[in-house]
Length: 397
Image (tube, rainbow, N blue to C red; front, side, top):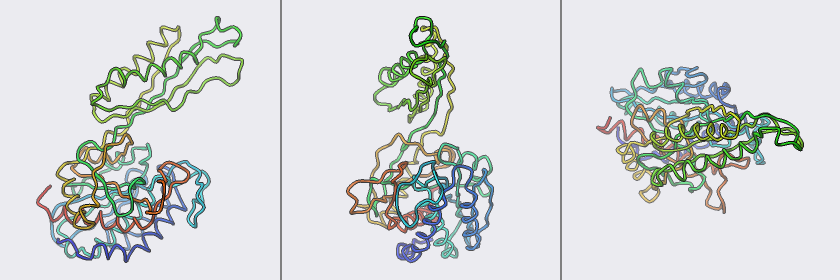
């Protein structure tokens, strides 16, 4: 299939519908595995386009299948649907109506964009050789929704040859898209360390085993794992986000709980940090007459873009947006569970600029004031549609 010359024009024509879908979803955010209203909307839109639709995939996920008129390869396009437990502070016509829940990471835009792509490609199905599989996933925010959908067969029947997705990028301006080959986003693990000592009166610390002091030593020591045991050429992060102990000023508690996250790009580094984190926590606690229980939970792997697929995306978007709009991107320590898909099939994940030209500062994701310029939505539609068309017309698989 040749790239339609009017692809951007077509995306702009349907932009009002894409914006309306995004605003509707934004007003009705749903947390991980609770995306029932959103998945119902998605399934209805796909059914209206004549796609084969499967619901309940991996919980609340939806899969739509667009079969071309001629046989060929299968390309998967993905969007995530879940929101975050954040109270929105923006005052807009589409502000969240659900107390304490907000689309603060752009998943409302991802979903609306992919629905727009389905509409564009459905209109061009007569020229498509192959199949486009639309993956609308739940629980990207720490719930491993992509893995659940994979386990439920999203990459099968028909087998997927390549996969692509996008994420809003609040640092880059509307009309820009950024991506890189190789490691692009980090793996994400989480840990909980429970320090068990012996509580007592704050005036008699010598009769206690103070878990707060021991916890503070553990927090400090954990920082040396990266700074003294991991090569500077292999980035890694150990961050403690919570240290909770005690209920009042004059009582030493029995326990202290430490929670945090580990990020890295390489499995060897990931395994080393996990091993040493456990040894350090237990060793320090033992040396100070306490015990430490470590619950280490492995999350999503690092996201690695296939070099050939990155070049394919750059070529498609260069034709669509101009080569100056397709930017390189440095790897980041943020995580993305589309990595589970890219572990299994080649593909690429791009970042879509959503910053308005007149915004002096970005409006970052995962904040109560996150927002985006809706002029970016038709750009996202055209970018994903062009990528799918380019892959199906290529000789790569």
